[in-house]
Length: 426
Image 1 (cartoon, rainbow, N blue to C red):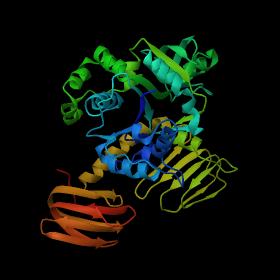
Image 2 (cartoon, rainbow, N blue to C red):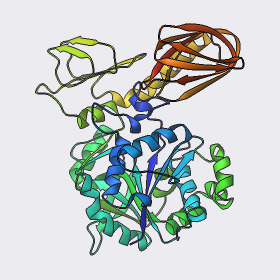
Image 3 (spheres, rainbow, N blue to C red):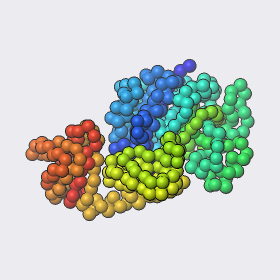
Image 4 (cartoon, one colour):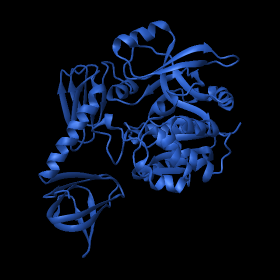
């Protein structure tokens, strides 16, 4: 059987603010000594195919991190990576991948592609493997295949799959319809019928079937596909921003669903992270330099600062070097609104001339068009500062005045924290 795995790892992970950042979004985060969600997905893929059969789709800003974390789990990606130049959702990412597969990889159009998100937890890791042959058979029969999870509660944070007739000779169903995230009342009704599954966001299809689906349902995107990979890649930011669920799966008629019998968690919120992590005898998850008295059913995470709590109950407390989040468990569905407010406040601080940067190990930050002297203060780490006049080194608690265009490179093996005071964005 001829199939490949496409691993989507380009999301920005805004709902896990403040830990998920532009430099390290949620799929690359590591909690304690656990591998990242991206690494878990790679390991899961290795149970199904050879490393050479995996293609990673990510953002150009995460390419280096994706390669580094892949090597740790034994996967050398070489040229098996597509680095998007802009965040344009899953439908454009898949369309670009299809063109890459045909034009660059020379894969046959009857090749079956499995689409794996890189921010899900599935246990046991081998659970998907038992369904691969059935998914391949259905895909070769012209189906778009999706995987579903039998719901255990009236969850309002997931999309649902409404099934109809059982398939013959295969443990699965014809799909009636995709259902967007419901309200509590609808979710409770779905649970009672037994006809609804959570949408696991895992798909399988042949290149030919999905190619035709874009032609039928997304002509605007298909026009870019016909222009070829190089042209599509160069103009990726211009392509319609839409998810594959909306673009294709909610419109197509020939869809099959395979139930996935496994513990599955979509790591899309702080509540789901808490659900995933191991708890102590009082239901707490404590990571980092946190101290507590009588905390219950809470999640406390700190990257460095000492965080203390008394009588914390049913809350999530996340502290980074520069930002802190406190929310009641069950409220993380409002994170997008809060993150938008945080972005607005950060913009205000930038206008006032106070900017905090975090530069990861070995990475560089280019700052240009600083039209008046800005005061650079290194809180932690050691920086190599390159300007038109030369290169200098600034260590922790040292500072300098800079103007014009300059590059900052982290020379340490941990993130460097810097303050730029008096910087106005142009």
